[in-house]
Image (cartoon, rainbow, N blue to C red; front, side, top):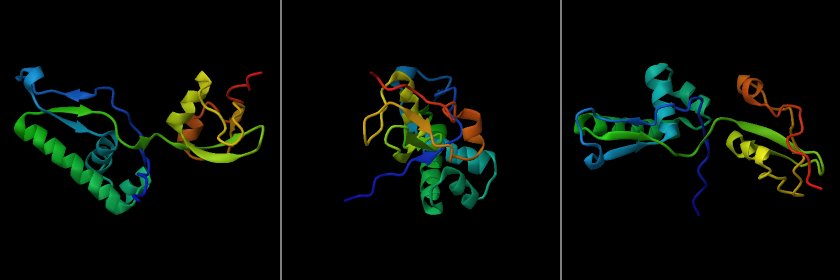
Length: 162
């Protein structure tokens, strides 16, 4: 059985999801889908100028995995530029951060992706052990992402339904 794909950590989500050749009839033009982790690899290596080891560490993947992501991204970009294809940026196996969370009822602690935790506000996320909605940041997450983005830090997210 194949190992599940590990989430790749990315820092930027692009505001513009398409690049379209200007002189093409849009409905008939072929497109390449560039995954968000591929765009992040290009940003880190080619725009920021980091070494592959540094890039891999920032994305929390191995160096060979980073190399495969980078090669895939460069192939898609080259194909789009040379053959006049649209680049559509979407999808992939990524997260903006991994946070440590704790259930206030049963005390269970686990790691969860930032994107999954956004469902807490809608009451769609509960403790996998006891089903409680009384989940808090366990305050063990470190780094500037958590300090800047973790609005859960030290606060109850959603009170348990009664």
